[in-house]
Length: 204
Length: 324
Image 1 (cartoon, rainbow over the protein chains, first blue to last red):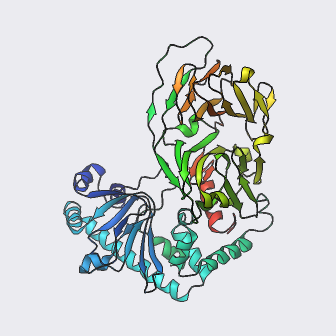
Image 2: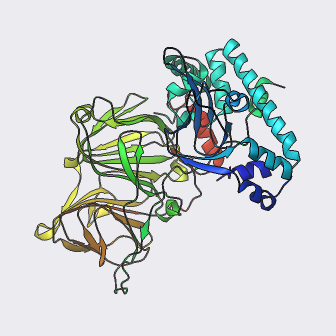
Image 3: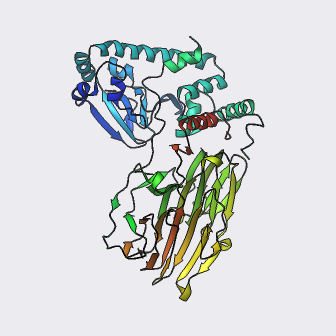
């Protein structure tokens, strides 16, 4: 089993040993939340970035008609946050909800400062994370503007290989910005394209 | 940078946990200490009922294994034992069950004790498992299915008691074509115990010369025992077979060790008689199988032999190979 604690995440990306890092991280708050619990609701101010050690989060907004739009999923090893709310101290537009029982590390400004003091290379790493995040968002915008449903789905399963196993297809359709029926059609077309008679012989 | 490379590199942090085991822990109680008795198979432990969790919104189960404590191998080839002890579901217009999900590399066996479960798969197969019936589904190379409370039962509500067992398929049969064995209660071969002590329904393997109705891919014995209060009898299972007994209803003693309702008795792998004394009218599930002794890797609904096979299963599922 892969160890995806926040400590492992940092030690595998920075030149610091767990024994040097753990005293710093002992100050970090952990949270155990049950499936369906909310870490953030619309209108609240988001105080933390949420690092997922175990479980699965989703971040979504409700439109004027009450329809859900999922902007991101956060499985193990991901950080989910509303940076607008945290950094600019604004009420959030988003909900962040646990889709499974979760173990979460809470990252706030004081923790970032503390780690930066102990591990100077963390500053560069944190900047890199921010740019990664911007890159991912840019990509997502382009995909939503110009990709076909099938192209979006293929990018989705490359990015999140096991999410289809963990959430209902309606949530994946919401993330992709397509109707659930379109997702079903995409999967059907892919199956027809990718698996010829020879390969499906063991599927009666 | 190519687009797909670009995207992969934008993943925050590390990749997903391929091997997370999404199952709860349980409390074990040591079996009553008793001196070994000649020619009796020892009781390794008696497991208390575990905390329950919901599978979808239709199954309130206690999970005896796997549980992260090595039981996956301890009871090989039996991989998972989820027991929904009797619970009352209210009448509802909302369907109770588990939505569409795939399986590969295992057989899933569903025993309905109370209530009824309806099943659909992506190939158009459909069935209803009524109280007493058994559905033996060989997922093999792949199945995409959903399981719900049968519609009439769902609307009326009532007592619901169900057991689901996963049997790991041997490496040589991992990709066997998917198939179903639908076993009606009235079709189960049975052995009536003397003096009205009860009946042993032989699901698989053999009991006192009576062969079971279901076929499996590795040597197993599986008995659905219905015992009357006061039953006191013994039988044997092969010493090398991993063997255990779940008390569905009632209360028994196994070679002197007390096992109340919803407790699970793990037997030692040794020769000897297994003496059952029913303190009350009881229903038992007796499982016994030859260990596979093969490496396995499991992830969610898949149990395979290598991590690559798990990745393949996830990819095949994502790309619609199991259905859509």
